[in-house]
Length: 636
Image (cartoon, rainbow, N blue to C red; front, side, top):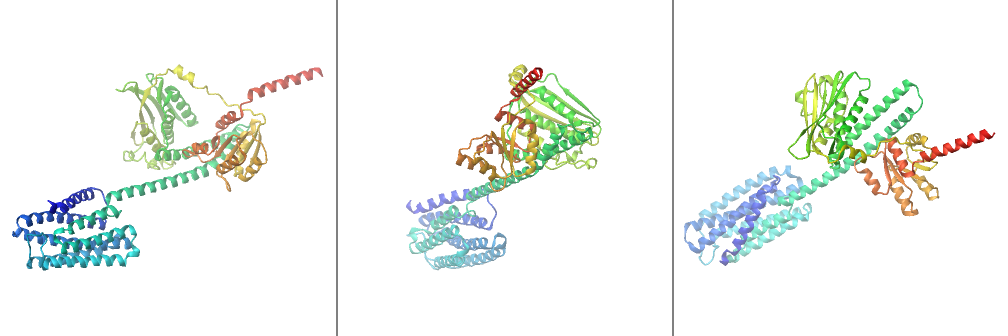
């Protein structure tokens, strides 16, 4: 049984390597192809090894044994020839690249075919001696086989020595080990036939290559390496995209901040009606541009898996009425009939992400208004029960009598940056992001969107979403929902420091905060900010832009906290509004976050939150002053 020992081990290893290599996905490079040939050759050699052992033990004089042994010798020659080709291909690929070794491989194949034919011819015309006392017979054929193998081993070593500097050690070391093991195995096989080491040496060579040289020979390691590389590239691409979107957001929102800020302030002043109408147009146009920017950022959030669906209890009818009010405002003076219908059987309180639902419907309504010059727009809310308990299908439809969509464009309308390519809409501008974002949001919410359209007559977009029926009543929900009240912040001379390297942004902030009775100081330099605060100037609130030259807002805040124990409430004032920025600024030590363009309602909320609303006390103080003045006047 001991005579089979090495063969059994070799066979087990070869079966494992053959299954692992041939069943795994791998690139069809020349090295992988040749290595697969090597595996099959050695597997055949191991099986022949078994056959020769059995025949030499039981039928040493049989013709089958003679030809089986000749075949065994042929496969030895075949192996060393293929490995020679493998070595040359490995070097050529490393030095010149895969595409430059085709001609070289053809040459190797020609030489290999010739030498195999020559070896077969010699084996079949030569007689050799054999003995039942040992498996490997001696004679001219065996000698020439070992000699040819040794010569090719020298060729392998010469190739590696010549190209030593061109090959990295990760490939050079295992190939050298293979050559040495092959040399030792061939010599031991010839000198001591009963030890039978040449086939185990071949197997050892393949195992060494499989587990050491990558990404060529080990497809598993190659796949892992490719996955890691792809992940790094994806992470880098995502990082680059985030940085790009951050810059785009900043560059667009900064001038928008000025346009919207000044325009909104002008609307609060007593101006001519014609001028007011033009300013309102400016505000509308700016808000549309801001909406486009937000759509780009929302798509980025979805693609980076940073946009979340937040389910809360909401009043379905309230969402519906809000959409109706918004649409009527957007229609303005356009001669379009707005039809809206709300089914009475819809549960009053549902559980879902009503913010995203509104965003979906707003996109559909905006699209309908954009593509409808005359006729009507219709918004419908309805529901139907599902088999699942306490769940309904909320069906929202937006129908218009606009230009319609050709059937061949149905598959394209939800693609990013693909507007409708129709003859009738050549004058209509847009990025095509609205419908793409709508589709992504619907998919995220587990719903579906259906399009029905007839070119030239209009379209219907229907969104179907599964919504849970809330256990709360409408009365309970209204009690929990804070009443919407108009902010009426009145300051009491609190000191505010606003730091921004853009002078226009500072003018906008001053204009927006002018009515609030605050003592406002502005700076355009981060270093001046540090100097002022370090010098002992006290402020009740600091608004600090982040993207400034010399030192960013984050760096300024970090310096102040580390050096003077700074703890004044500080709001990050920034045009960087991409996903996760608020959380980032809070983690960096800011007290809160205010994005540009500045929303006046949000600004007032922050002022009330950090300075307190003194409107009531101010009114009382004003009344006291009036009473005092009246008394003085009466006395006089």
